[in-house]
Length: 608
Image 1: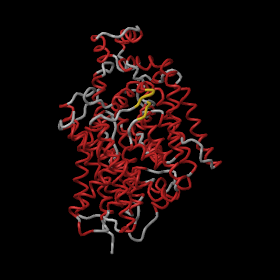
Image 2: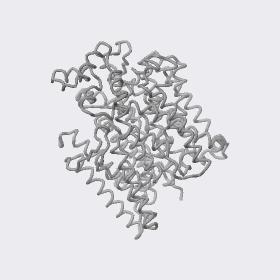
Image 3: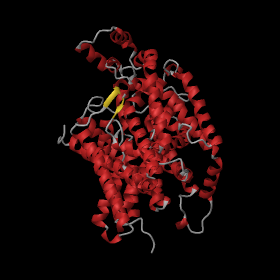
Image 4: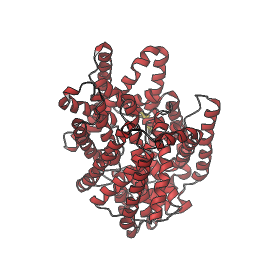
C-alpha cells in the first residue's frame, strides 16, 4: 500500500495549525525576546488534529503529522522575523539617526519581502539536506524530539509502545509543571550567583532535555563558554563597558550621559528618565545589568570562532558536497521517485525569487540590484554556518548570522537603512535554513519524503509572512515598542546597523584583535579534531554560542548533557531505550506551556 503523505487532512491541518502558531509567534518573540521551540508543539497539535479528522488513516498519521509539523515550523521561522520590523521601529526611535535613514515598510511590502527572502532560504537549504542530516555530529535536538513525539503519539500498540507513551507523558508533565510554576505563577525563581552577567541556575527542563540530546562534548563546551564570561566579563566591562554604552548614544547627549554614568551618584528620577530616553544602555550599566553590554563585545570573537570553524568543517568534507550536488543533478527515470528537489528546480526558484527580491528592494528601499544579489550569494555560506551551529547546540544563531552579513555588507555600503535591510534578508534566509533542516531531521526519522517537505516549507513561508504583516501593526498599536514589547533582537540589529555606519570604529576596544584570534582558534579546533579524532576537543559552536547566550540557559544545557552521560554509564540499556523519549517530553511539555498556553493567557489578561 502506497504511503499517503499529502491528504486533505494534512493540507488543512498544516494551514490551520501553521496559522495558529505563526499568528501567536510575533507576540511571543517581541515580548520574551526569543522564539520558543515549536517543532514539538506543532507535532502535538498535529496529532490532536489528525486524531479528530483522520481516524481511518491509522499507521499513516505519522507522515501526515510530519507535513503539519513542517508547515508550522516554516511559518514560525518566518514569523520570527517580526524582529526586523521591530528593528525598523527602533531605528526610527534612535535620535542619532537622520530621518532619511529610516526604513518605512507597509503590511503588503512586509509580506512580499519576507516571502521572497524566505523562499530563497528554503531552496538554498534543500541543497544541503544530505550533508547535514547524515552527519553524526549534527544532532538537531528539536527535530529529534519532534520525531519521537510524532512516533509515540502515532497510536503505537504493545507493551513497548505503551511504555514509551507513558514515559513521554510523564516527562512532558514535568516540563509543563515546571514551566507553569516558573513563568505562570512565579513560584520557581532563578538563583543568580553572577546576576550582572545573567549567570545562574534556572528551572529550565527544556534546556536540560536539549543537553541530553546534544551530548557531553557540546554541553561541556557551553559550560566553558559561560566560565569565560564569568571570569572575563568584569574585565571587559572595566575596559570597554563605558565605550560600548556611549557608542549607542546620540552625539549631542554623549557628554551628559557620560557625566551621569561616571558621577558615582545615583541618578534622580528625572535623570533616570533622561537616560531611558537618550542614554541607550546607560540605565543597564548603572543597574549592574551588564550581560547585554558585554555581549556587544563578546559577539565579535564568538561570531568569528563559529564562522571559521563551520566553514573549515564544510571544506574538510568537500567530497560529500560534490557527491550531494551530483545526486541532485542526476537524471531520474521517474520524477515522482526523486527523493530531493532537483538541482535545476533549486537554481531556477532561487534565481526567480532573487530577481523579485532585487526589484522589490530597489523600488522600495533604493537598494542597488547588485547589492541584493551579493547579499543573497553571501547568505549561502551563512546558512552552512548557522545550520551547523544549530545542529550541534540546538540554538539557531539567526540574529548572529544577520549581524555577520551586516559587518560584511559595510564593505558595499555605509547606509544605515541598506545595512538593516540586508540584515533582515540574511536573517530570514538563515531562519528558513535552520527550520527546514530540523524538519528534514524529523522526516528522516519518521520516513517522509524530503522533496515533499521542501515544498510544504515553501508554501508555509507565505503563512508566516502574512502573520507578521497582520500582527505586527496590531501589536505595536496596542503595546509600546521598547517598553511593553522589548524585542532585544530587533534592538541589536538596529544598533548594529548604526554602528556599522562608523566603519572600523564600530569595534569596541580590543575586540578586533580577539576577533582575529578567535577566527584562527576556530580553524585549529576543527583541524585538531579532524586529524586526531579526539572526542574531547571543545565544540567551537557550543563554546562560541555560549558567549552570547544567557548563562542560565547554558548551565541548564550543560547539566542535561552531564546527567545524560551519567545515566548512559550507570544504565546503558535503559539510557538507549528511554533517553530520547525523556528528553523529548521535557522539551515538548515546556514548549507547549511556555510557547502557547501562557502567552495566550497573558494576552487575554488571565495572568498578569
